[in-house]
Picture 1: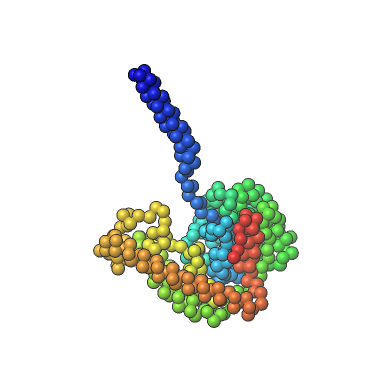
Picture 2: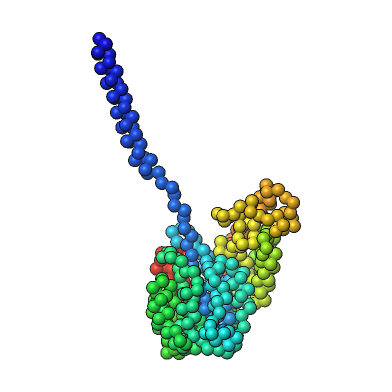
Amino acid sequence: MKKLQIILMLAVFAITVSCKAETKKNEEPLLAKIETPTPKKDRYIKVALLLDTSSSMDGLIDQAKAQLWEIVNELSYAKRGGDRPKLQIALYEYGNDNLSSKDEYIRKILSFTEDLDDVSKELFSLTTNGGSEYCGAVIQESLNKLDWGNENDDLKMVFIAGNESFNQGPTNYKDAAANAKENGVVVNTIFCGDYTHGIDSYWKDGAQLTYGDYMAIKQNQQTVYVASPYDDVIIQLNVKLNKTYVPYGSEGKNKSRVQHEQDDNAAEYSKANAVSRSVSKGSHLYTNSTWDLVDAEKEADFSYDKLKKEELPQELKGKSTSEIKKYVELKRSEREAIQKQIMDLNEQRRKYIAENTKETSNGLENAMVKAIKKQAEKKSYSWE
């Protein structure tokens, strides 16, 4: 009897061990399937704008100043797979006698930046002076000195505008184009003058080598503005929007001042241009995380513990962290409500303009937007 009991106990033990082993075996594949989600990568539209600032280009610079915000607004509607890409703009000038001959009359004004106020500020500071326009050299310089990244899904575009022969200077434009193509950068050329003359001056060839677009514009053509019944309300909302910014850090006060200055610069051209800028400020492309607490708080590496109390605005000095958080949250709520109002009104504004005007032909704006949309489609970007 004892032997039988021992045999039964051993059998039960063996079955138990076997079942546990089987259970563990079955659990392993389930555990293997649990993966840490990969953080979603931001997509970018990267635009390097290379502007000829020789003495004949005042009209081109004027168009860039006047049409920047409408270009930004059009890009704000871009989507890829349901996500909205971010926008980075870099700025170069070339062909100006005030620049150093050692640098081939080329100056990098801005590296790629999402700070649209900085772009506006620098555009308004440009002046023209006669010089030598080396297109190949400035394209190559932008390829060498800008961070284009390694993401194939990003839109990477050079827009170079000028009115002298494309083949001047020590750097062969064909070599620069080959380098651009190798790095996934599309070169688009904008000739300021007669379309055929631009072809004869190699501007079209400079674009086609990278499958870019060649365009010709009248650089001295005045920008066409279209007024709408919604303009005054949008401008009033912009004033309220500015009050939701919470400047902080060493650059806070200065950047806040620049923001207001660019409002004034846009308004100098017309009420409609001020409206265009206000609409841009209502979009996701207008972000100021380097100096505004509301935008900064959304960044992954932001920490309230890193804030220097002496660099906070007056209304937050002496406040606890919880009080600062509450204040920032209030400003965020106000901002989002105002931005929604601006965007809703802008939809009505766009519809009004489409119904009440003929097609406008703002040279630089139309040329850039048309090329960007065409090239974006090849990478599965779409527009609403």
